[in-house]
Length: 465
Image (cartoon, rainbow, N blue to C red):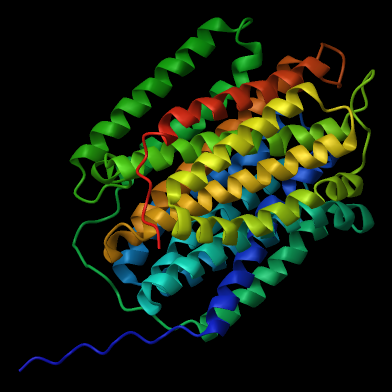
């Protein structure tokens, strides 16, 4: 005689709200570095390249953690793994808050990177405890809250750092993360483990991907000086290619690969990843270049703003990003993912190309940054929502983690590219980049966004409701 499995416990509105507040807190903690990067560079005596590394080191950890988090969540239950990840994030936030120098701050940012893996885990939980339509709305809400939280961090970090110190800008959102993690642990129903298997962790895949990311960062860091050290630069390119080839071979043969390349080969997955990468590359360049442009005081360009003033200029972006998540989820349901992503790519390209030719007034910077934030939120939310609802329930974690890893990679490449451009555009003996450097950065990102439309037009329209 077999016993019927009890239906999953329904998730209440309070639990969904708690997930949303945790997403805001983690998003805020993720983004406090961006608006205060010029301040941190001065206090810790960092070069633009080192500043770019600090700006994206959290993303590197996220790239490594997210696939494992999604897989472990599918296997052992999303809530169980998510609470443990948030403990690591909280520890990282406290390390960053207490950091006396750059190496310790980098360590804190590395630990904070575990937060990126929490998003696919929350998607696993809501799919198990809500209906299909409700889960789409909840995924859109949580994604939007995370993006909105990022903008809250961008807005509040400057005033907190200037009124108190850089230590408190990490401490405040960390305390919020700890509080809402405890609330989520209390309100969120436990989801039963999913499919089990005996395959272990893909350590070779993890080590090789780590090598790829570290080498890629070194390539971008050395790029401005490649002319003076050509052999070293070429050697790094060769090492990078070897890591990529080795990682691909290992993942194809692994019983439980870190990144399921067979899933990545599905058109709906790889096209979503390509578009997400491009959109997030443009976003990251904007996020890095805009505060630097607002901070610099050059001959006829720049504004010489402090961290607090920079935060206020980014306020429209905070509003746009907060609205983008719910708008992306609703738009994906009503019009299909392709329509939403097309609109996002057009907005992104228009904003970046406009900034490349018009960045002499504060309102131009504010509007351009708001459009970039809106485009990023629309794209990522539509992609995650579409993929989360188009794969088997047991694959939710790993499928959505592929898009989120791509988001992180795009952000890392965009941030390092922005840092490399500013380093190359700063004359010897000067600390002020040339205006043409900012123009080139916005132009490159805008052209790439335009090219992404070639992929978008081949995507399926997506399911409309």
